[in-house]
Length: 296
Image (cartoon, rainbow, N blue to C red; front, side, top):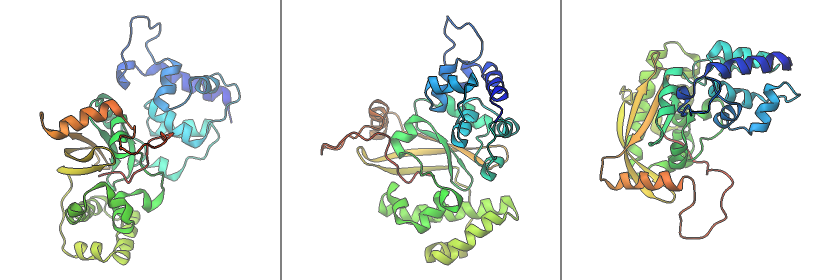
């Protein structure tokens, strides 16, 4: 591990990022145009002391997960991200080389500016890549899964718990939309072996998926009215909008509510209470946001 080069590279990338690029106010006492160390730490979910130790080359050996968080915080492109992994003497995971798990800069720039509405970036296979604080408050933390199980489409047809995010009466509608969307993605990706394996596995494991696949329906999910089941707020009815990356491999999802609607009030309450538990039965405060199935 080349700690000196790693530290120098991180500092050079930090100096390059402007506060406005990541939704921060520049402030009047800023001595340098780039980010401060504590700001990078905050964006990456690290302690300021630990990030300082890394950037000063004082022996900290960041994990692959920490490196991925720093790559997102510093807006590294894929070449820069791979270089960061190499400097830290960490193998670049196959999932980190493709476009799916490295947030595309245009979508990340928009996500940074969506501070008053739940928003997240997913892949075209409905794998959550990153999300803002309000999305975590609404949906919970995404499951830390790899392989096909990382896809909500896969979990939707193989794990009944994945459906808890929507009311039971809405399940047939979402099943149909998931399958039609997956068919469009499969065609767009061409001869992608990963997608082909997912489709084949779902046809074997889920009669519901197999029947829907045979209909031949195809339609990308661009916008939707969704009813989301929240453990404290109840059912929240929101409009869900999709913005696609240029290559179609990633989507920015964000949720809005009509002004004056019940859902608008629920979102306002959500922005105040965050991930606190509002249920009437007293419970110990969780150390972190509850993990829930995610949404697409």
